[in-house]
Image 1 (cartoon, rainbow, N blue to C red):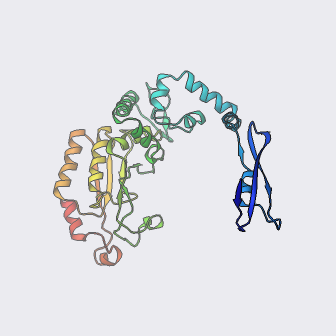
Image 2: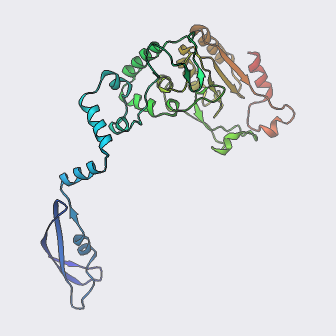
Length: 310
C-alpha cells in the first residue's frame, strides 16, 4: 500500500504477521523508504508498536492486580450476600464492599443495644431513639429514595465526618458573601454568594444516619460553621434540612447574622413543637460602632436585633 510520509516522500508499507505476542496478535510493518532513505512515516512507526491483546489477556491482567484476599471477599459477597449486607451496603460498589471502604451504617455493635461509648462519649440507656428505630428508619429511607440517592447519601461528607465538640455539623451550603473581616471561611472559600448543598432533606437525613460517630437524639446538630444558614440564598434549604432531621429529637442550634423574618421564625417554632425538638438560635453581633467596617455586607445590626425580638 502506498502512503506519503511527512517529508512528502512516497513509501511502501507492507503488512506481515510477526507472530503471537501477549496472548494476542501483533501487527508489524516493514517500511521500504524512498530514494534518499527517508525516516519512516509516523503511521508506520505506530503500526510497528501496535499490540492487540486478546480479551482473555486483559482479564488475566486485571485478576493479577487484585490481591487474593480482596478477590475472595468479593467472590463471597457476590455468591452468598446476606440480607443485612444488601441493605446496609446498598449504593456501594463491589470494590468498596470488598476492600471494606463502603460506609457501614449506623449500627455499631448490635441492633438491640447502643455500645457503651460512641466516639469517646458514654451512651446512657435513656437515649430517646433505640438502635432498632434507627435501622427501621434507614430501611424506610433506602426503599423510598432509590439507588442513586442512596449512593449520594453514602458518599456525602455527612456520613463520614466526626462531630466537633459542640455537635455534628449539618451543612446547608458553602461560601458566604457577608465578607466579615475576621471570618475563617476566607481560608477555604472566596467571599461569594453561597450555593446550597445538593442533597435533599431526606438524603441528608439518611447520610447522617449512616454516620457511626454520633448518637441521634443525644448529640447536638449544629448549623452555621461553614456558611450562614439563613442567608437569603440558603434559607429554603436550611428549613428543609431542619424539618428533615427534627424527628431525630437531637437538639438543634445555629448561628446567623441574617435577618430572620417572623414567618421563618414561626416555621421554626412549629417544627420544634411538632417534633418535640429544641432549637437554639444564636444571632451574632460583634460590634455596633464599627459594624460597617468589620462586617461590610452583613445585614444591619438593627435588623439582627429585630430577629432576636421575633
